[in-house]
Image 1 (tube, helix red, strand yellow):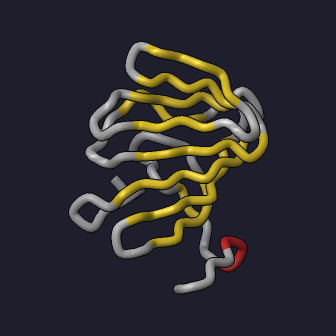
Image 2: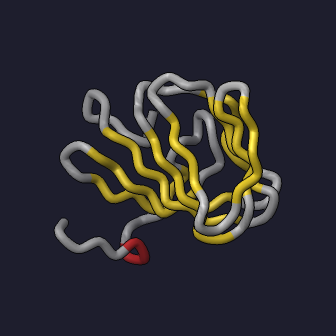
Image 3: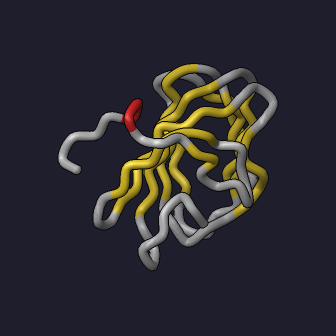
Length: 111
């Protein structure tokens, strides 16, 4: 899949165990990149996983908790989650993000 057209990839709840993140995933050999959305008031409960993750906000605003730190971020900002760090997200308003995870045991977002 050398070219990725997210509007042509089937949308899904990508981490229903932990999150209401909804969107499309592009899968490579060692990384998975999701173009995801959260409705205002929804998000990802506090959880941890063995994947390293980087999330960038395109539009909207989210409140992010990383370990003991918490911050509200918006477009053009993002956050880095090292493996196994407790983290969570709450959308303050409808929000779109790009979320990148490395694959661990062949698994990315679908933990």
